[in-house]
Amino acid sequence: MPSRVPPRRRIRIGCGAGFADDRIDPAVELAEHGRLDYLVFECLAERTVALAQLDRLRDPDAGYNEWLEERMEAVLEPCARHGTRIITNMGAANPTAAARVVAEVAHRLGLDGLRIATVTGDDVLHLVKGAQLPLLDGPFGAVTANDLGDTVVSANAYLGAPPIIEALAQGADVVVTGRVADPSLFLAPLMHEFGWPASNWPLLARGTAVGHLLECAGQLTGGYYADPGTKDVPDLARLGFPLAEVAEDGSFTVTKLPGSGGLLTPATVTEQLLYEVHDPAAYLTPDVTADFSRAHLTHLAENRIAVTGITGRERPTTLKASVGYRDGFVATGEISYAGPGAVARAREAARIVEQRLTTAEFGVTDARYDLIGVDAVHRGAGVNRGAESTAVEPPEVRLRVAARTATLLQARRVGREVASLWPNGPYGGAGVTRSSRENIAITSVLLPRELVMPSTAVRLTVAGAPTP
Image 1 (tube, rainbow, N blue to C red):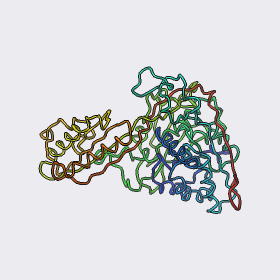
Image 2: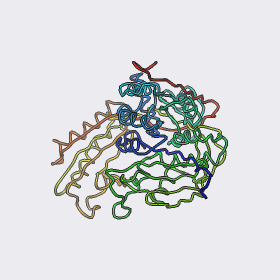
Image 3: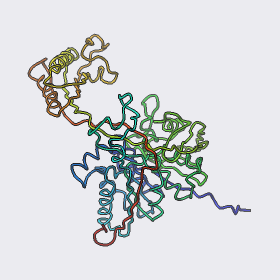
Image 4: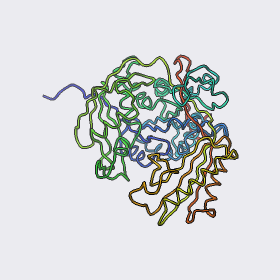
């Protein structure tokens, strides 16, 4: 006799981007063939919002992800056709302007009636600037946000799931946010669809685990896992992005589309589960304190891993806020040397530049001299180490000079010194590049969550121009 018990409802949610400059074609693949309920684009690293705030200061209509329009051109129509809702933090420092771009793309594609929501309120510069809030990280010691003075250019709190849930409840097809905690982008639609209470910590922890596994996209499907000859991953050039099938009780399976590149195994899932997690038993988010320490992974089939054993407890009473501040200027200059004695010539070039940069004219407060291919990654003493330190003389080597200065002019002078090696010795230098930029450093503070006031607005695109 057939069972009369209805199958458990499952939500399919995929990740279309794991960082600001991620590929677009895997997202299109998911939009077209993933049978998704939700497609999430997670595009904000810690420094991204601060840099976007600088863009907005220069242009009030800027400050969102530079690939927003191209991504929406690629996925809006298939998502609308298949009933897939989109959630993204590509709004960065300017979700309102980003939503206008989405509306314009929707109108060009003939997607009249598309509802686009913005989530704002993460900008807490007014709360942080001048406040006696201890800085959590950086080479500061007992320093507060107030001590950074007028160098502070941005402060953005990590919002949680509630404002996104509100947007979905109002019928939004696309939700554009600024700084939201990465897992919260994925937790919100699960809370909305299943009606999970905001105080059911085990359920929220399981949804957070879904988000934490998916948020870096191709990392889960083998991208960051790959190590040729040791941990081989097939077809990385066509790496497929992951999706999760989530049940109402929070149990879930992670998988990818058949035929896409990459792989999903207990090993790839374990690596991503522990990625950027200080304490697996206490992963702090705005929504819940998740406990991954008893996670159990079951290999159901090829590229299908079930995850159980996640639990959680009450969320923190504070919200983390990333603070961006001006920290001088950074100059880089590079030059290549090839042929016999390349390492010795590159080291001599480094010594020349180092001697010249010690004068007050350059105002260098910190500098590095790296030989790419010899000691750049392991941070050897590139100037003082002798050529005999390499067991095999490389056929070519590239000197990279990086320095911090107080002014842009001083930074440009550093690059000029590297370029001047070309005619001024040693011989054979070529391929000079140089750049100078303002350095925006990041630190963080904790804010009482009741001070942070997120807000949600929904707009509708109709025939003709989108509504204001």
